Image 1 (cartoon, one colour):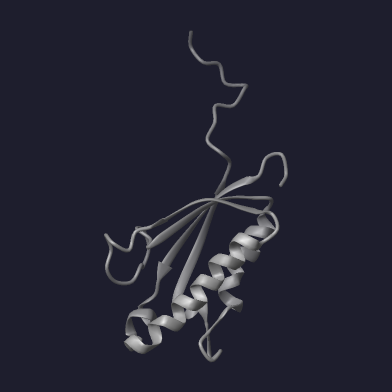
Image 2 (spheres, rainbow, N blue to C red):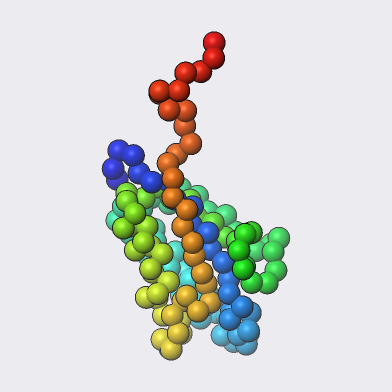
Length: 124
């Protein structure tokens, strides 16, 4: 990890396609999503710091804020963030007919850790 990694908030939503599945198809999506989480944690240059699942307080698809789940991570650079988001394009669900992005969406917000910069003069 570089000296100043990007602080990244991955916002994860569940698409209507997930809710349209018969109950028998839901497990395959969760298996694929679990694979996404493992792949994200195993990606070089990503250190997952925290995650939040808001499924107990939200029902139905996430069309925007509030999202269903969030992952906060330190990431070495923007290409690594892009690769992490791209995992939804490559991970297949069940028999491989569909990719995970059919059921789950992701958005990344990048910044820096919130700290007072040394050049800022504090009163007193």
